[in-house]
Length: 249
Ligand code: PEP
Image (tube, rainbow, N blue to C red; front, side, top):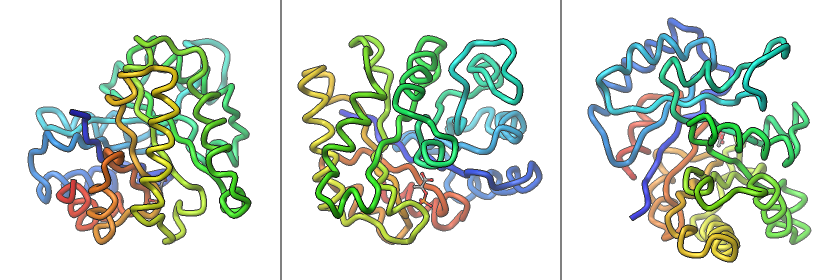
């Protein structure tokens, strides 16, 4: 049985008062939920306050990024221990916006993934092709390369800790979502590629879909055999939408 996960990536949205209002609303709308596991990923500035509010509740906390070193002279960066000590369990790594606007390569993502696992955070590793790559028939080539690069040199023990998110870039924040069949095809490809390296273990890894998931399309996507949850951007900021997505899972 694979763990079902619904993660909300708030991106650069919500001041602290707004964040608390959203979390309070979610708690009263969703209530207690163990399955799926719900992971909230507010901006860094809201993590501590949201962590306090989530005490005693079933939700997990995630960060949207971290640095690839444990401490030191890296002005403006955030180390994994800073996240762990305030109650963060997950960290989104290699999101397409990080890759695109902050030049994060597979090599950088790989360093972060290794450090996250070493320090005890669960990485949600994002991969996905751009529109022109899909149109050129390069989806598997691109996704395969990102997968291999981001997870390079992970031992079986390390790989057990990983969560993957397939997020076609053309579907992120655009309202254009992959059909369940399109998403399933890539999820199966990812799992089969992982099976070649990690055999049995690949069947235990949760692979989330991300890209304009809403309360309306979640059920179809989440019914697919290799889709184990969702990484949700825009709709995770709307209580009614996020609630519906959680209930669909
Ligand atoms: C995301 O940010 O990971 C994402 C999938 O965004 P959206 O749901 O808004 O497309």
